[in-house]
Length: 179
Image (cartoon, rainbow, N blue to C red; front, side, top):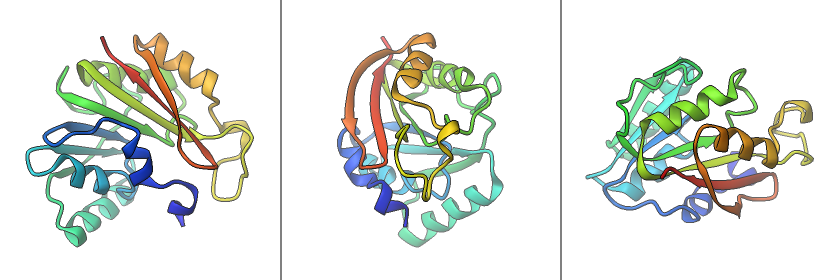
């Protein structure tokens, strides 16, 4: 059902993900993006599938086994805490922040953690629910983080806006870079 709202391969296509990249998937859920990212980065790449919910990580582990994509490392992480990802400074090429800003109490902390772990020249992709879109399958409108708010959050963490792209009928997508 999730793919009816959001096509992971189409979204990833908008991002310059390359074989060998190390990618942190913030709020990986059931591996919706982690699995196609794992295929894209290949055996020399790595996906750090991070989520605070143990049941989400178990679902990701099940997909890793099912699809035989063993470059995905699911780990429990509280991304609103300083150093909450457990990853080293400047250790990843890309960070995906998908459908978690609306859930975060401290949205700026999530952006700060992405900035900390991202290499200079790396990029972060934000995919969130459209502000005024349908609520079926998504959060209530009052919890959604609009494009302008997301842009302010990421820029306040030190990122530079790069581009916006279509992420489907119910989502928007933006890419930011770290200089």
